[in-house]
Amino acid sequence: MPTILLVEDELSLAFIVQDNLESRGFRVVHAADGYAGLALFRQAKPDLVVADVMMPRLDGFALAEQLRREHGTVPIIFLTARGQTADVVRGFEIGGSDYVRKPFSIEELVVRIQARLQSSNQPLMAPALLRIGQYEFDYPHQRLSRPGHTQELTHREAEVLYHLYTQRNQVLERRTVLQALWGDDTYFNGRSLDVYITRLRRYLMADEQVHIVNVRGIGYKLML
Image (cartoon, rainbow, N blue to C red; front, top):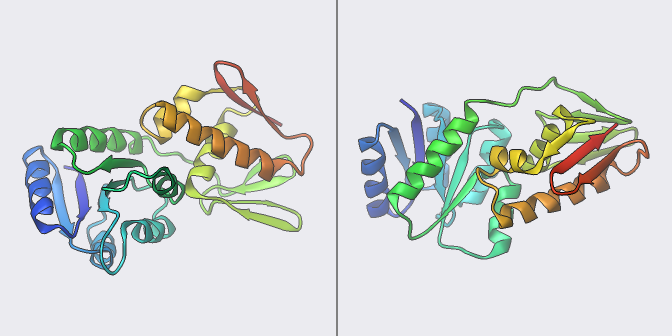
């Protein structure tokens, strides 16, 4: 039975969500703010976190940043009334797995939870250090280093780079990485992926032998 940590300060909404998820076979533990959610995460060790963005004391983004430092792979789904692109991008950059905008249906939330749990059952496994030309890629700690310089990566940047690395010198299909990291291949998610690819190219540009090339209509290739 998967355990879901629900961090939501609207108690009436939290009760409805918890009741409906439990009726569908999930075990749900609830915290009413970010600090309580962090403590409960350490105690319950959930399979997935559903967190409201706007909460007192410690908001959902700050909670996610702390969870990513302590646990690099647990899926995090944000609940939010915010619709601005900047907020959505920030949530993905700090390691969010998905967004559900309020108001939402329980059916939508359940589908998104199931999709993220299915993805997390196939975790990415990597050695501590991966060699990319002149660079060392520390995937677990999200760092890309070369002599004299270290680039701290966001969670999403590290995930995209690792997918490229696992298919190095081969084509990584765009749809594959979008499904694995975002859960779908919508236009907006595709544009987000393009942003991360552009950033990774910039991080790797000191080594002229390393290139991320577009394969038109298919995806990308990390050439070493």
